[in-house]
Length: 193
Image (tube, rainbow, N blue to C red; front, side, top):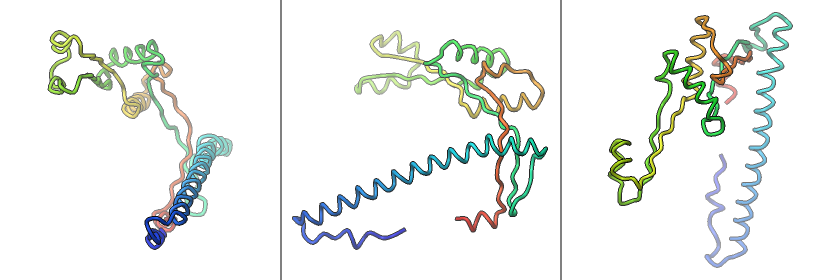
């Protein structure tokens, strides 16, 4: 990482030429960073396409699930994804997924968040119960938000699918996809840093 400490000294506090030059330098660096971030995003998308589409298809055609190239292991396996539909955008689908979890022993996956909107002078009310607040402070806006974290749901779905359960994947916003992964030996990973 280059040091910019020497560049930081201005000739005088009123030296507008140096000030403008420093501002232009900062703008140039910002532009360079933005360009590199765009390129990284495009490269990430290319990598995702290769790992999630091209490599799995090629490996399936070759009848392979794993191979080694240049000392690097390339594996292909099924990965499970699950995320209930957004409760605000699709409340019916969210409710159906939540109902399924509730009726199949997974109610504990759902987390409830209680948001209490209070004026500054009523900050002590945050520790009281929702029902108490609704009765005692009718001017407070109290909402209850229910959510199921996608990682927790994915683990739950994956475990049940592995045990042979038949799950309503669409209701749970779940799917499985063949994905390739690249595993580098530790020594090779260290040299890539």
